[in-house]
Amino acid sequence: MAGEIIVRLTIVPKSRSPKHGAKFRAVTTGSVVYAAESRHGATCALAREMVAAGVPDAPMIVHEDDRITPSLTIASFHRHAKRTYSEPADRPLHMRPYAEFPDAIPFAPATRFMGGDDEAG
Image (tube, rainbow, N blue to C red; front, side, top):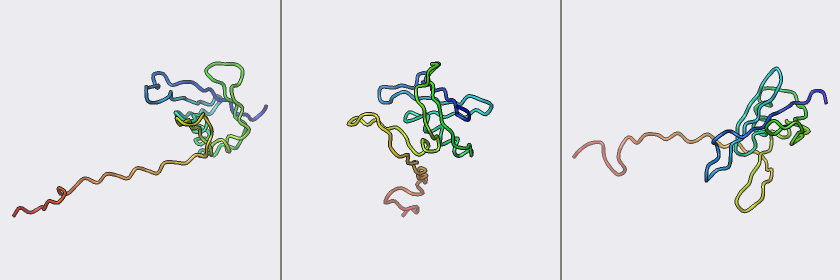
């Protein structure tokens, strides 16, 4: 199919831990390369990067590792960018709407001790 985006999906080495699943890396092939890593939907994160870069919508064909046969075919990567994967302990793997985490509130250094006073007295 012309205009499709080919993606290679691989596990990031040594990214799995006892408390977290492996991190995946999704990379496009072709003249312009886009890449993203995520523990919860690397293809979704990649799609968000491409939407932000202004890439026109197209089907996305995903190959895991170096398999020849596609593992996943996504009809619209623009729609895929609005989703992510979730796998909580009480529910099987499923897709859900993507919600960006707000920026962390910066921690302001304390100017005085709690209940204290700057002046001795």
